[in-house]
Each structure stands twice: as structure tokens, then as C-alpha cells.
Image (cartoon, rainbow, N blue to C red):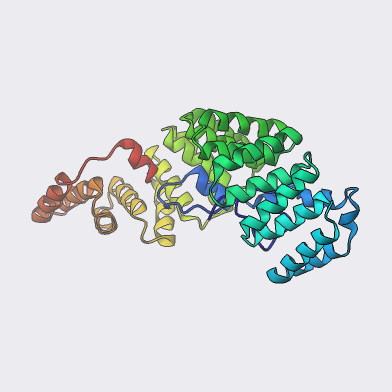
Length: 375
């Protein structure tokens, strides 16, 4: 599914709003994209422009058929909505707004050819109607044609330079095209237009990250978190970013707040436990890591770090069990086998220790950065 594919359940918003698709993301690799997938969709954050269009001066928008189209879409009756939208443009062949609504209906039903034609008709009738340009961009974006979508978005922001969604979409489109510098600049425009929109700062964070500016990405995430102080995903991502920058002590406050707000998020508990352990707070780390393994018993990194915490606390029997579990879940993870070999030696199981050590030597080494990300 494309980032720009609209939702049928909110059909009149998709002409103007960029939808965020939950990207499949490995639990052990927390990213800004994973955070974006958890945010409310943009129609929850930005007033749909269709509302403004319906309040405009175009007489066609006062036709009762508009309400019938909305009712059909709410009832998920796509066939009726399509028929009504076509009747609408037949009744009002000189109305650009009518063609925009027809395009929105078609787009929501993935009838891309009809949607594209409707938006082209709207632009011919009223070239400066911004909605038609954004709709054309969405038609292309829904099909993954981001190069084709780009000029439509440029025209949209030219007509509506104070519309944050336009700059947001343009930044995302540029990023998908590999135009990293432009993606950053467009995201900055989005934050300048609406500095109170956390989603704009998150797009800036994503663009900065793609451009290789980890510090700029972190600053943007922090700004987003300041705007949403009760958002556990935002606080967690701030913590994850500090960990990836090896500023682990600074990760603890936001992760602690995130864990308080969302106590059953295993990744937050695991990363907080790792951070506490890394800063010498072993006793505090253990319950966090225990909770993480209880919520997600198949998450190997938490078992490995729980084993380390037990080891540092002198609980060698518990450490041995944790490392055994870690190696079963992560059979190619070298450090887990090394730790297991150490505990076998402590328990007097020399043969098992030698086998575990041999297994560790047969595996490739791991960087410290990889270890941090998989905490």
C-alpha cells in the first residue's frame, strides 16, 4: 500500500490529506517510520479542505446530491457513490468543484483512471483550484508514481503556501525520489508554516535522518515531543534516538515517562532496562527487563540483557537460564553465546562452556552500534 493511498472510510478527506501507512518494522529496530505509523492519521490533525470547499461560492456544492454522495460513502456503497458523482458532474459540467468531488470518490475506490480524468477536468475549468492539483498528486502517489506526483505538489504549494499538508507531502515525495536535501527544506517549510504541528516536525526528523544528520533528526523529534508531552511513542523515539547516538544517560528520562504512560509496550521497557543497565543501575534495570520478557517472551535482546543484569547481581542461575533462552531465540548472535559460555564456566559445566565458546567463535562479530539498537 502506498503512503498516499486514501481511506474509503473517510472518503471526502482523501483528496487533500496525506495518509500514513503503518510500515512493517522489526520490533528490534525502532525507527521514526515506526513512530509515524502509530500517529493519528492527518485528517485527525488537519481540517479537511473539503469542508472549506463545500462552504465556497460554487453553486454546485449546494446541490443535494453532495449529501447523497457523502451518505453513500459512509454506508460504504461505492457503486452508488460512483454513480452519484458522475451524475453530479453531468449536472454541473462547468463546475471544477464537482469534478474534484468525483475525483475524490474515484480515488478512494482506487479507480485511478477516472480520478485522474476528473482532476484534469477540474484543472481545465479552474486552473487555480488547489484541490485539483493535490488530488492529481494523490492519484500518482497512490500508484507509487512519485516523480509524476512531484510537479502537482509543487503547484499545490504555489497556490497554498500556508498549507502545512502540502509542504509535508512535498517533503515526503522528495525523500522517496532520493532528493534528500529538498526533502529537508520542504519539511522545514512545513514546520515554519505550522510550528505547532508535531507531524511536521516528525517529517523533518525523518528527512534529516535520511540525509545523514542524526543531530538534526534528534532535535526535530525533541521538538515534536515538546508539542505532545503525553505521547508515549514520541517520548520513546526520543529515547531511542539518544541510545543510537550513544547518549544513553539522556535516554532514561524520556523512556521512563514513556513507560509510565504506556507500561505494556515491551520495546520501551526493554530499551529502558538496557539504558539503566548500561549506566550501572542494575537493580532498577532488572524489573524493566523482566517486564519486557514477560510481555514479549520471544524478544531475544531483552533476555540477553536480563542475563547480564542477573550476572552483575550475582544471580548466576537466573543468568544462565536467561542466556540459554537468548541463544535459542538468537542462534546467530555471537555475544549471547559468549555470555552463556561464561555462565557455564561459573557453574562448573566446562564441556558446555567449551561448546558455547566454540559456537561464539564461529559467528561473525557485532558492532557496538548494532548491540545498542537491539537493546
